[in-house]
Structures are given as structure tokens and as C-alpha cells.
Length: 427
Image 1 (cartoon, rainbow, N blue to C red):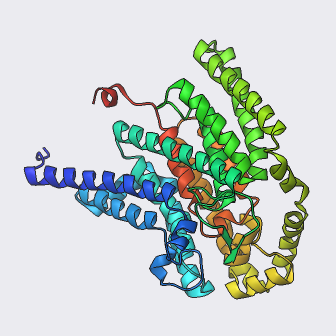
Image 2: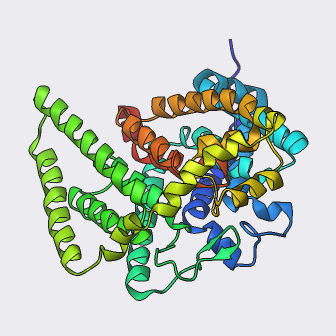
């Protein structure tokens, strides 16, 4: 017969869980409100040359790892916590192990900065472990914060677009993009903004706004669609049209087939379609889309870069192709092949940076993590995951340093979290 926990044990558990909850909320706040461009503006060398190693890692990562330590403390033993993780998150545990192996490979063999591994891969794992263990009340509060942050991000983006002002200056590879009209807003780089805005809109269309009133959900989705133009994300916009249309059609088909087409659902989709149509007509007549359309017309540079990146991989020495290449050597090949602002496919870039021997098992582990993420959320999350992978496949994204993966994980876990049980609702 197991002994009942003592008062000290219960106090320790309560203290650890409370601290973990607060730190998780703080990590999310930093993730969505403090961009890499903002850190650079504040004098922290996050995405620029120079600076100490600690400056290269996003503050949200530090806070998330501290929250994990508090959660392990609350479970009384790291061993008990690891057993819990292994039981419910096998895919995430394999991905974590592969990420740590990649960290060792980067440190001792490739001799590249490790900050990209921490922010890009370790932070999403930490958020999966943290956000899948919070209460429904905490999840609802964080979801409302996320809605507020994305709404503020969209409003700031539209303001920047119409006034030519900037919350933070745009910088790519250490070069200031003075003539770039795209907005930076709260999330920083326009491509990251476009990815997260489109992903958020898709998740909302799939039922991710259950913490908000239907009218407010409709307005937020329309606002995100307008902001998407201000970010100039061509691929994200096109894929949102494809995946959003497909997801909506599948949702309506299932509702009709199983006779679950309620008046509220019809009103929601009709309101979005009507408001979006009216808004798009008004924006088009006002010339709002002229610069965005120019992004498609002036795409020759990106198209050439996508072709040249395959030539770059073919120019790698055999050892570099198998086990990864020195970052300076890859950078030299980029310049020689006219690839100015990065390899525009994380699949190709990953092989170039870390080698095919590491890339193949890592991609398999990444698939396991996505399966874990899907199991921890509601069924529609599969559409969003495919959308995310599709957009990331057209840019450096996961092969570089980005907080976008962590943001996406947080969006899915909070907005498409499983429906609460009766006990959670009563509590």
C-alpha cells in the first residue's frame, strides 16, 4: 500500500507546478512579443556577428528550460518525469535524442554555432512537454493571450505597411534591407511573419478559436488575411488558399455527410467568405495589392536561387556531403552560385550543413515529433502540420535559427487542444 504524500511533498509539488506554469507563460510571452530583430535593436547580438554565446539563444528558450526543470522538481524525481515523458511522448523523446546528437555533431565535427539547434529544435520539444501538461484553465488563458498577440501583430503590420514606419528595422545576413516595404511587426522577419500569420489563420478556420466569440473569430481571421499582404509572403499565401480551401471543404463535407451542419457553422464560414470578399475588393481598388503582386513578378532571383542550390550540393566534397561541411565553405559556395540570402529549402540546406548521414535519421525523428504533436491535438491539426512543412520546404527555415517552429507548436497545442473532460470543466 502506497503511503500518502506528506505535507512537504505536496507543498513541493504545488510550488514546482506553479513555478513551471508561470515560467511557461513567460516563455510564450517572450516568444511572441520579443523577436530576433527586436533583440538586435536592443543591442543583443542575436542574429548579428559578434557577441557572447548566451546572446545567440532566444530568452524564451532559457525560460522554457527553467520551466521544465521546475516541472521535474514538482514530479519529485527527474527519473519519474522522464518515465512520464517516455510513456506519452515517444516520438518527442526520439526527436530530442536526435537533436542532442546533432548538437554534438555540430560542436565537434561541423564546428558551427549551436544556438540554431537550441532555438529551432530543443525549444519546440520543451513547449510540447510543458503545454501538454497544463490545466484547461491555464491553456484557455494562454490561448487568449496568443489571440491578442497575433491580433496586435496584424494591426502593427498594417500600420507599418501604410505609414512606411518600422517597429524594428529589417536585417538579413547582417545587411539592412532599407528599400524593403514588407512589415516586421512583433514577430520580426517578414517571411516568419507570413508563415505564422497564415498558419494561425488556417488553425482558426479549422476551429482553433473556441476561446473567442464567433463574431470575434471571424474578424480576427479577416484581419490576418489583410496582414498577410503586408508581409509579402507569396508561398504562405498560396498554400493558405490551397490548404484552407481544402480543409474548409473537407470540414463542410463531413458535416453534411454526418448531418452535423449547424447554423452556427454555416454562419461562421459565410461570414468569413463575405467579409473577405468585400475586404479584398476594397483593398484591390485602393491599390493595396500592387506591391504584393510585384513580389510575384520579380521572383526571378528566388527562382534562380532554388535551381542553384542543387548545384551547390553537387559541388560539396564527398566527406562534406556525408558528414557536413564547414559553414565558411558553404557560405563561399553560396556566393559563387549567386545564392545571396540563404539556401531556399531546409531539406537541401540541412544536407549541405550537416551531411546526409545525419539528415536522413533526423528527418525520420522529425516525422515522429510531428506525429506526437498531432496526437496531442485535435484531428484538424494534420492540415496545419502539412501546411507548415510545405511552406518551410521553400526557405532556409528549419535548417537555420528560427523560433517559428516553437511558435507553431504552441499554436497547435493551445488552439487545437483536446476538448476538456467534465472534471476539468468543473474544476
